[in-house]
Length: 257
Image 1 (tube, rainbow, N blue to C red):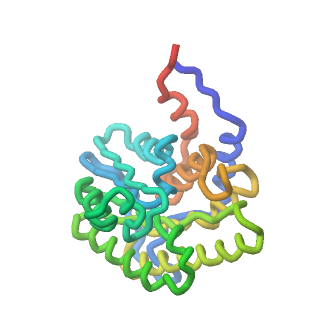
Image 2: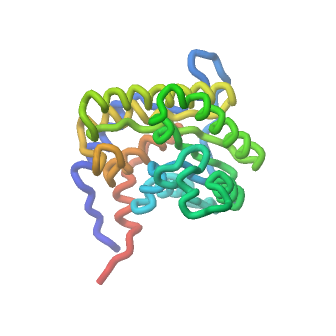
């Protein structure tokens, strides 16, 4: 068996999880019927759709690992459709298609995946357009949710994460303020559409004060994805692990002789 070594950073992050009040929300300040417990069933097809927040986890696999190990006896398929620099209109995907458009390619990718559950993470790129871009973002997000509904899949929305150290302090504060505006817009739409919403902004901001979780102040590093995965588990209402995801990942890696 592969020898498992878990860094002190991972152990520290695992202990920190109880510090942050994170959770799954369907409505804010409005009484709602509690969500049923999160569960993956045989035949489920889970899609991660968004920008680099999802694509960059392909090299670590923490998000998929966190969910598969919760339901080890289930036959579940995962597809990571994250695309660096992408928005709700699939603009970044247009770099490899002309035609079809980036949006057509986004719809094609989503449709071919035949999802039963879609984790949706956008807003980070769109926030660069400021408040003037909010109506366009809302429209694109609504159409994307419409498409997922048409496919018969469930949607869980994830907020953008903050910028932690890139840019000047003044510009960073302005950019983060706008990211929060877009996160609020996503939360509001989740309420209107009856979809679960997970706030990543504040929990990521808080843990960044105790550990280095990005490679450049913007994109998460391995430690960051470890924390994101554990945050996702907690937000979905899954019980605390007796171990941690880092150990599970270490044990699953191939042994080279």
